Length: 170
Length: 160
Image (tube, rainbow over all chains, first blue to last red; front, top):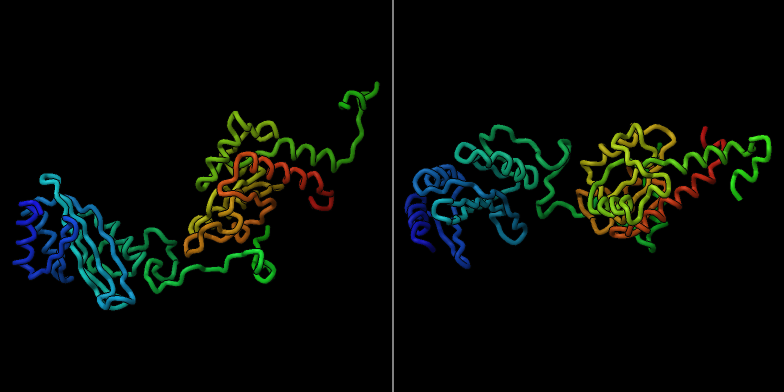
């Protein structure tokens, strides 16, 4: 861990009582949902982490009980260092404050996370689906979302599927 | 055995209307300039100098559905793209044909998930399926010639 990054991580630890894990020189700081906006503000304003590189989510269902982790990768141009913030979220319709006010490009990332994982962002200015059609039901990257929609035709089940398949007409 | 031998002195040739119309349709079947994924690369290769689809009267890829006769669905169709594809198809004037190029548009190919339509025949009626992932230009041209064969076999009542 670089010196500057160490300072930033230490500050987060002290202010937010956060736990830190390090794996192959990558630092993850675990935070609570109501701390994330303050943490991002501190990183941006005090520690020169200017850029939100990525914001995404992970679904650990059914292995772990805080089902979702929201992951923020934040980068400092000046110090060439990256920090990863993680926020575990429980429940099937979780919500978390938006960090759009700190990093404006979080807008589309959060729309994507909403679209794919169904995580609600409080205070987001425009929380719509971004990838899936607007009338889509469900959130496809959740682990309990069913895989295929239709059975695939092979030669052994062609006749059976062909009999009920609805072909398009003129 | 060219036309000139049949002409005789009168400058007249007789043929069935079906044959003439089908001949005209197969010799100038303009495809739509429209690719969805990697199959479109092979479609471009089929159009380019080495394979040269213009040998079969397809030198013009029309960028407008209103000027095209043939839709080559080149690539996987996502569920978000499906209504757009259908709309393009609806805008094409009759008579119109569809070739499902490659495994993805024929049957879903390697994809079995929420995002990809398993077979474009659920969206538009398909005349010829071309297998391959992606099919080589020869494969596409074979599909086109198969379609030409189908069109040549069409009868007068089919048009109505």
